[in-house]
Length: 375
Image (cartoon, rainbow, N blue to C red; front, side, top):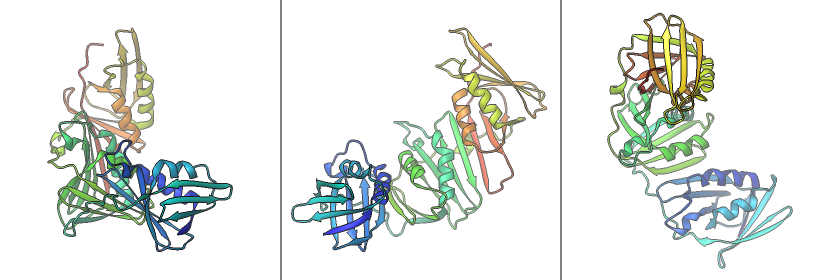
C-alpha cells in the first residue's frame, strides 16, 4: 500500500507528538510512532507508557488501509530538511519495509508490527466532563507552571491543581516557596470537583495548545484523565492525593500595599540581581512614602547595588526580603502595566497582584519572605 502526505504537515505533527516520548523506554516499541492509515488520514500515536498523545494528519491520497510502527528518530530525521512537497510513503505489510519518495530522492526504513504497541487505559464513560476554552487552560498553565514542585515525597505538589466549582474554575500551584492562584469566573459548571494536572503533561500542553484551538473537553476520574481538542487527544494518569489548602496560606489582611510599574520594577531587580549573593539571591525591598528602595548585596565579594523607584504607597515604612529570581519570574508572568505588592509584616508572605480591571480573571502570586540580615 502507499499514501501521499504533505511533508511539512507530517513533520509538524510528528514533532508535536514526540514531546510525550521518553528518552529511555521500558519497551523498545515505544521508541516508535504508531501509524494508523485509513479514511485518507494518518492517526499518529506516541507514548511513554503512561501518557498517550494522538494526532491526525490528512492525506492527499491512499491506496489501502495500514497499521504499523515506524522508528521515531529515523522518520523525523529523514523528512526534517525537506521543503514543503508531497511525500509518498510505500509500505509492504509482508516484509514491513517502508520506502519514502520525495522530489530529490528516496529513503528506506524497516517498520515494526503494530500489534505489540500498548493500548491506552482510557477514562471510563461515567467520568466527570468539563468543556472550557483552550485559551483558559493555556493561560492557567502559563500562570501556574513555574510554581510547581519537583518533590519526591509530596507528589501532589508536582502539578497544577484544577479546582472546579459551580461558579468558577481555579488553577493553583505551589512548591512551598511560591504559590499561584488563578480564579476564572467566566467558566461555570454544574458540579464541584478537582484534579491535579501533572507537570509533564502541563508542559506538553503548553507547547501544543494555542488560543485558537477552540473548546477543550476534559474528562477525568480519580486516577486518569483525557483532553480532547479538534486536532489532538491526550490520555494520561493523574497525581493521586489531596492537594494542600492553597487558600489557607494566603494572608487575609495586608495593611501595607504599594502599586508599582511592573516593567520598571522587573528591570531594577534584574540590575540589582547582579550584586546579590549568588547562593541566597536575597533582595531587600524597603517601602516608605511614595518610594521603593531595592537593595542587593554580597558580603563575600564586597559588592552591592541600590535602586529607587516611585510608587503609590502611603503607609508606615516597612522592609522585607525576597528571592530576587523568584520575584523577577513572577513579574515576567504577570501582564499588567502595574502590580500591587501587599504585605502584612516581614515574616509573612507577600502577595503580588496585577492591577487591572478584569472581573473574569482574578490572579495572585504569593512569595514567601527571606530573613533580612543587617545591610
